[in-house]
Image (cartoon, rainbow over the protein chains, first blue to last red):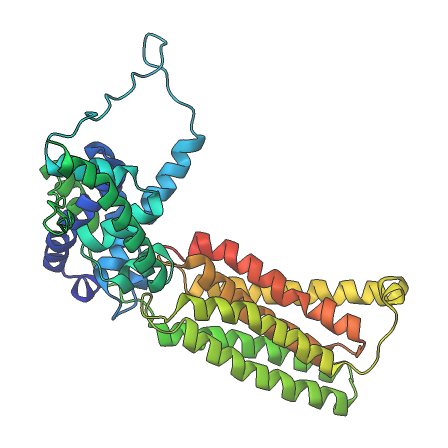
Length: 172
Length: 233
């Protein structure tokens, strides 16, 4: 990041290779839509580019970028909430998306469904620590809360996940 | 019989997803076009700038008090107090802002400072007061007008310092921009209110606590709003 701030374009490539897949994975989990995730990835990198002069040297880069991505997502979601829904060309409302299969076939599907059932605060804490790979302290910074709160959310989320997945593992 | 924890061997979803080629090229084009060295100001310089603006404001209030021929004993007491609070502001800025985001220490500690320091400051102003009139008398007539005038001037000058400091720290905190903004607003509010105690001739308790002291709370709230917009990248 510091070499990128100093104007080395090859440093940007290295930074992009390091950050983009993780950020894309994180944004895809937030949006559940590839096109929206890619739009948000562009917005995130544009913000990183604009903010590079004010990047405080020594700050950890991945949580910094994840926090920017999360804020971009929240801004976009807030804007979408107040935006009127567009009608399709024939004047009807857009078709609803097909729902996820009601009965999970594999364990990974069951986990995905169980994660979606968790309250947002628990899900975010588990995703940042377990999937994105941030430390408890970094996740607390990104979510603007304390480390204790993150530990509590992860613990409670795990308990709920266990309950959800027990029924799947017991099923014949 | 113990049941196996289903989370132990969980097939957690992958953390990384490769963006499309078109998306990567668009980002690369945007972020490397005309790329040049853009060295930002260090956190230490921003912190010094913030304290410098507070010092400048205190200097202005002192100059005003001297040219307005305030009694030197009263002014000296208030000035010593304001210098002490300037030290407290420096401590606040270095503890809560001068380190990189993510390494700024406990959010609870910063929140506690935001809530406790203004209360302590109003307590200090109450100790500084030399007289007390009934509240009804304070709100009416010349006293009320004087209180409103003092409050507005302190608010305006403090807002200039808060705005300048937030501009100096802009786009530096994606984690808690509102909290950082509120802390900057609080520091500017303390600078303005303690400076106003040097320049203002009134030693009345309601006047100093409400007209000067409330500026700290107002600027903390203003800083919170501005910070959320300007401090996040």
